[in-house]
Image (cartoon, rainbow, N blue to C red; front, side, top):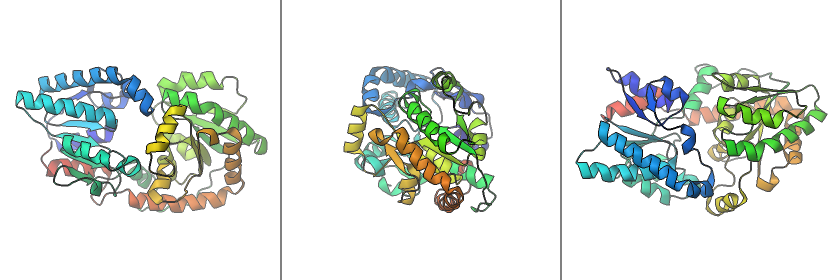
Amino acid sequence: AVHLMRAVQQNVKQPVDWIGIGGDQMQKLGLSSNVPMSELSVIGILDAISSYNSLLQIAKAQVEHIIEFRPKAIFTVDTKQFSIKFASLLRKEMDNVGWHAPIIQLVAPTVWAWGAWRAKKFEKLFDVILCLFPFEPPYFNSKKTNAVFVGHPEAHKALEKNGQTPSFKRINRVGVIGLMPGSRKKEIEFNLSDILHSAELFLRRFPKCQFILPTTPNLEKLINDQIKNSQLPIQVVSGKGAFKNSLSKMSAAICVSGTATLQLSLRGIPAVTCYKMNSLNFFLMQLLFKQKDPILPNILLQKEVYPCYLQSAQTPYNLSSSLIDIYSNISFHQKKMQHNANKLIQLLISEEGDFVTSVGNHLTKNDLI
């Protein structure tokens, strides 16, 4: 969302007024947000159901706000189910008052993972869908919505860090293991304990290793409370630049499923991945999810880039054993990951340039801002 805001601001001559919902980084760029971003953070079908009424009230309030201020464009970012409900309510209200503005979704629904039927809802409600992956636009009917690949911001970050071509210098990161238990409270509660125990088992084999755990300021206390009795040589870092700086130090990592797995892979860092959630949520996911596992690099490259341990398979023994196998031959695994990173970068970069430029070009070409 921050990159999206920059894309708009770079292509609009006059100052931009932003209203809506967003986190600290968006607010620093001028967003006036009266709802904590954490209120939109739900995990799994059960959470979505239990939070339905509160999310509905948030959506209705945002619709009223938009109808009052009549903005040039409306952007929804990720949060697919909330975005669908919000866009549906907004379209009805725009029809009622006889005023319309384009509704633009950034991050397409994962129709390739959950079923193509999801595309129809988005085609009906959104004028434009900005896709992060190149294979996503064909899932949508071009006569109903304009779905376009704009590249992935993380690929541009990786390319920028490693030079103007997607090739890597030889990496010699040794001694620091990243622990990445998630960016949501429930992810921490379900996953951090197993990750810490696996790190303890790993440390018995490699006692000179250190650990680093990047997080956000709002989760730092929760994490520190869980690790306070641990004897691990672990550094918890948060705040501006903490995540990026920690990536540059890691030789390998244990990471829960999510965008962080893509960020690791784009920087050529070997890792073990995992995820545990509410048992009923996991059962429902197994029924509906179309891919072998939810790990983005594995899905994008159609091979096992990272070993993945889900639910009952996520045990300290399994995680530590897999990490020991990687670290015992770390040079080989780093070289293999460099090759995978090159392929991912090439796959996820738009022909129009970096993410901000690509998004800005598309919005201005179509007179959306």
